[in-house]
Length: 219
Image (cartoon, rainbow, N blue to C red; front, side, top):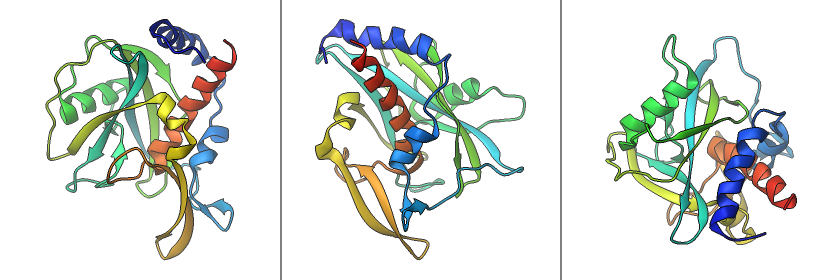
């Protein structure tokens, strides 16, 4: 895989076209899905009363190291899914498009200036049973990200992870956790000093990685 600044921008161009075609969806999501006795621990099928939500999966090109990175947040202990790694996002308000939701939540949570973002498209929707939400991941790119102002009521920390780091086998782990009284096999990435990257966010990012690997196989 070539490692230069043009390669990163070429991947962004690739995504502009690739996101208009069928996506890997469950094939990718299942790679990071918790399992109970070899079967999915939670259903991925939405209910009739499911709440729509959206998250912003934001890529930037770190020109100092010539690598694409994704923005992630560590949620505060004051909100739903507290203490977990996630992308900025929240519930879709009545009459609101998911892309508007994702951008609004990013502004509110981390003070992100969104006017200079390039919206590339959407990744596959993902149903999250514990919160009964159907997430639409909005994929975007920016060459420049402003100095962020974190809303400490919602976000404890903002950090960036290189896409290639998530492909490193040394950061991938599986452990048995006790979830709701069950011994569940949980895949996760160890990319933060205190908190594993797992669950819905990991499943969404795995689909992005599928596309990243597909792109690099074409080079």
